[in-house]
Image 1: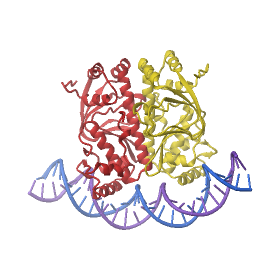
Image 2 (image 1 turned 135 degrees about the vertical axis):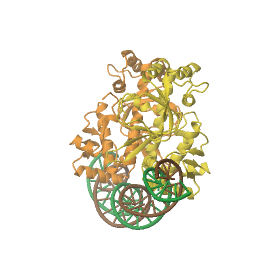
Image 3 (image 1 turned 180 degrees about the vertical axis):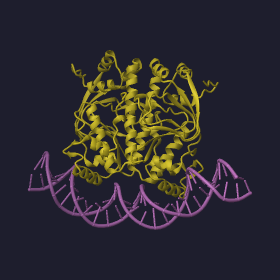
Image 4 (image 1 turned 45 degrees about the vertical axis):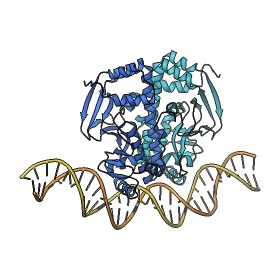
Length: 245
Length: 245
DNA sequence: CGGGACCTTGACGCTCATCAATTGCAGTGG
DNA sequence: CCACTGCAATTGATGAGCGTCAAGGTCCCG
């Protein structure tokens, strides 16, 4: 369906893959010429629900998406935040049944690809299979960092760390500067990422604001002094960058 | 240069891969005939340290290994526990520099493979590339579950959930029954998995023991009533099993 | 101008951390 | 065989960090 020239909706995604490994022009062209559709969705729309089966492959073209689970005690935990350029459906490639839900945070555009051609392509082209593996490994690296964040950092450090990560990833995905980035999350959603309550997130953000660590409001964050914030956050970006340092 | 017949040290690993996707006899044979060495290490020995570069590919043949990071405030978080049959070095395949340390929990045997032949093999054989991708996705699924565990479950539920996971994974890796499995972790190490203190882990385990939820001691756990434990744990094994349900 | 998200703030309580002993147990060497 | 050592498990007392409950406040939008 959609096939913009010169910039396909997959451009951000392909550039992200190329930052991790080398894809030939042929490989990129093959990706771009996969049959796909572009879907638009409103904020809060579910792209998948825990338990869903037979999902298509989805790449986020613009906007923000989160992945979460609601527990039997009624609480919710967000396990991932996706930015434009991210591949959303790696976790669904292995198990038939999704274990978490995908939901839009903002109005979004998503590319949908049928699983079969995607699988066929990655079998034909080792470079693409490799890129997907590296993508999955990069995701896993972020999950492990979240485990560390939730396990061993207090509310303030934990919050600061999340902001550093999102700033860095925004910059990496070409969404701007790491010191000024969009944060389309309510304090309740931040709480569900950080394993806190919205009340405590509120106090924590307020504290960071009054210390001049961050400037925050209206869905945007700006960081006056990146070094200061990343020190408070115990943040080391190396878990995000896959290139040789 | 061990090359046992009929059971190669890679048997457990290959069987695990085959549970996730189909490998032809040729594929398996190709894996088995990769040049490798078998290393033995004592408990507490480091296989890799945060910051290390150029690591070889390692598969755990027997024993237990954990992956952890020490934070600047001195605390430690364990982000993974590996059982016999697990591939240990997927995270190192992408970034040159390890972000966490790998350390033996018990005396272990490890297969080491040079990265280059492994990479070459996965480029030649799409099925092997696919198996590695599925392995990585399965790992990531466990990490996300740990995020949920740390973020939104209290000490008792969280501990119960970990035990359910380790029981299930032990059974999956052919190390026995899910209701009676080895747990070669001190209470301090459990605390570093669960984001708690060893004191609190002690009280929690004690509480679970006196409720008859588990029987625990001497590096072993046995579960009198699996249904009861998994209810307390809010445990749903589907995040571990990659097969169609 | 009214309703509905979301943010903000205060008072209070509980889970879990901290600090500090004590006990048990396995290994080691005299 | 029995001190000696060292690590892990256990227990108690106290307190901090964060949760809970409840009540506004603010802003946007119809």
